[in-house]
Length: 295
Image (cartoon, rainbow, N blue to C red; front, top):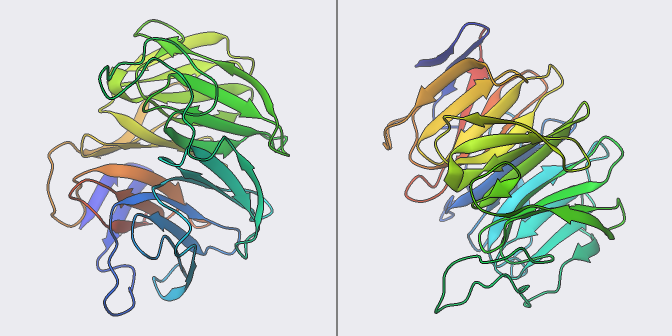
């Protein structure tokens, strides 16, 4: 099965990912690839961090009994692993071997954003965190975190985990968010997935709004490769590949399905050194699909 178009045409690698007997994918919050093309799958199961080679052979797992709500993942240039554990309200940096280096956020203590069980609406912006979603690195190694389900903020931390500044407020205007779900800095611009507003907003690294790209279907994860191509996992059963002006290069999906090569709930996306694409799914999707680039 081939999908995509033009220079971004892919062939589905059916059955990628050999799970140990009795293991399940679960809801796969994120997927990321390290410098050795090892594929890291962050999932809501008893084996939360599973690692595979690029051919899909299982290598090892870690994090059992530690993570509660696997959500966002990023791997740095030195193969450090950054993870968001959503309901415990924390983001963490680990060595590649899984040693915890530091934690951001107050574990088990959500910030005040006006959101309560009785009032399920974010009424005002709050500090880190209230159900954070994803994270990524600046070119200088600083840490961007989208704080999303019960907040409306983007936070920037130093490379050592100290909060530098935050921006955003609830709403649908420029610089406002309704479930901010992913963030990625590249070449002096900051791209933010504003999920429930079905758009991507673009800012300076200082948080000044530059432009808005509408027309996405609940964008969940942003990833930009070395060729200045932006990959978007959209919860609305679609994947989009766009240039840095928002022009669509390739796009497929839109109807929820379990059919191979299509999607139910894309939530994570990443490429490896050969340009092959990995997409992870939540909701009833609960799988990772690999697409081998053929053009």
